[in-house]
Length: 477
Image (tube, rainbow, N blue to C red; front, side):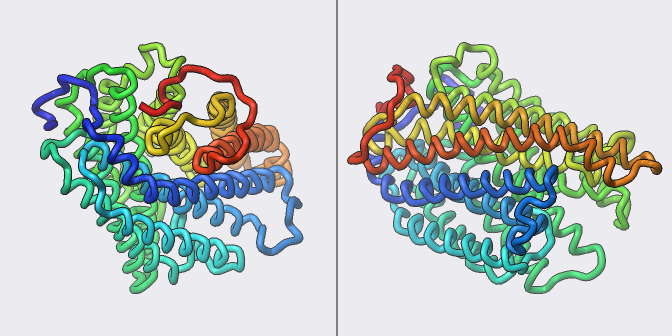
């Protein structure tokens, strides 16, 4: 369906979607299981990081778990372990389902996933032994990047084959975002490989490239995959039309033109040409139009009853987080407020909410929706699904409140020249305790998902106790 045709029906699966699901099963299980394992590991690492903020002596005797290495490790585990693997599987499934043709690139998916996870594991080992770059969101050792680049290129080829083989040559917004995401990931990794490791620039150019590339990974991979899921799940589960589908193409192009430049707004006040952070601020202004389009098209998530669908509830959390961050990004980059949030935990809150609040709930919605259809059977425990939703959502709120509160408190205390560092650390401890509690809840939710997923792919295991319900997204159709 093209943008000019609007939506005359909800996003459909093709008539032979069960055959497509079955053919893709082998290519989906490996990256999904790896993704959930990386999610559990990443949540555990970020919990350790949060605990060290209010208890600096925690694991301080082990060099592998020093503060800087733990921060780099959890970023790598969550961004390259969890979001990449889950994104590979979800994008491949979405493009195959909407295309309606039996997927041809399953072998590329499996091989690419194997090498990708091997490279992420090597990157984690390198980080723990002290071999890290120091570039935010790109802290893995340089020797792992060529493997990551080749691996995601193989996955991108599989996704392109699913797109090229589609029976209906028109396209949905889900396909736009999904296909663009699998193009931009290898593109950004190639830029990082060439300009940060193979032939690094001098002076401030490295900081500009790192900001542009790191935030591009967030805005052009994490965000588009989440939007692809939202544009698919909402009409598929509710059977309603997207109200302003004609606007969706404008929102798509705004994101992919302005998204890469959002990272440069964090360079305000640094030793850079004034036009570089100014471009980031201007991109933040234009991005408000993209945020408005997303809000208009997905408003049904907040106006209809979604209580009976865990997939819709997770999608609503994802879209709400996306809209909040999109609106808050502009004032946080302007001069009156920017000095109060720069170099504080507000920036860390933004990164964590993008990964754990935007991508992660959307990925959960996709996993809970697609796995029963792919495996041909319902989830083993509906009770674990319900607990997972509440643990993750409450945990996300605590993480947001904890890190934003700590960042704002931190900035006000830093502006007071008479306040000692010890007083600042003690003043921020309640906020960090709240954030640690939220991360502990999210870790528990990730463990529940891991248990349910293992039971789903290995049906011979005994089922855990859990109440039965009729949630349609947990059962095959």
